Length: 251
Image 1 (tube, rainbow, N blue to C red):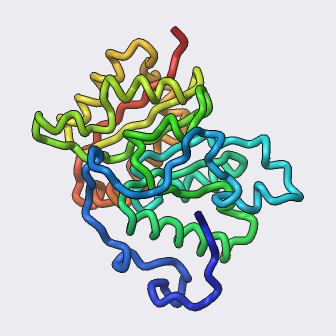
Image 2: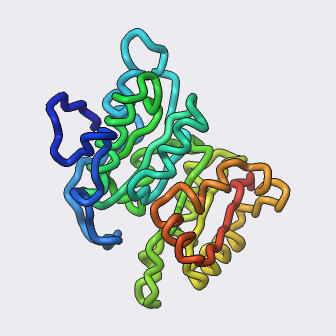
C-alpha cells in the first residue's frame, strides 16, 4: 500500500527527495521456500488496486476496467519499473519483492517520484510477496503481457535448484497468467543459470524464443542490462550477461 507522508523523512535525500538506499539495504537474496508473514489476496479479485494506483482508480476516473499487465518478479530497488513506467505510461505494472526493506524502498521511491513529477509514475507500484508461491493469487488467467526475471538468485548448489524462480513447474504457472503473445524476459550474469533458464524455456511447450530481429526491435530488451542496479554493476565490471526472452504461444 502506497501512502504519502508529508513530514520530512530523514531517510530521503534533501536535494532529490528520493529515498537513500543505505537506509534500506538487506541481504541480497531471501529463501523463497521459507514462510513469511505478509497479507496475500485469496484470489486476484481480492487484490485492491485502488491502494496501489489511487489516481488511476479514483472515483472520477474509469480505471476500474484496467488491469495490471507487467510484473517484475524480484524487482529489487525498482530500476526497471521506473524506466518502464514512462516508456509505457498507459500500462499498469507492479514489482513483486520478498525482502521487506527493499520493498519499502521501492514504495518510497515511487511516492517521491509521483510528488516531484505530477501525473507521472501513477501506473507503477510494488507489493511484498513471495511470487514463487502466490502468483495465481494476484493475476487471472492470461492477464499479463510481460514478466521480468532480472538477475535472479542463482542458487548454485544442486540441492537448491528447486528454489530457482525459473523452473519447469513454475513456467506452468507463468504460462497460465501470461496471455498468448505475452513475453518472459530473463537475464543473468551467471552463465550456468543463463543456460538453465534458457533450457527450461526452450523445453516448455508453451514458449518459443524471440527472433534476433524481434529482440533488436523491442525497446524493453535494451533495459534488461541497463535499468537495474545489478545490471549497472555488471557493466561497470565489464561482465558478461546471458539473456533468454521467450513468447507465450498457444497449445
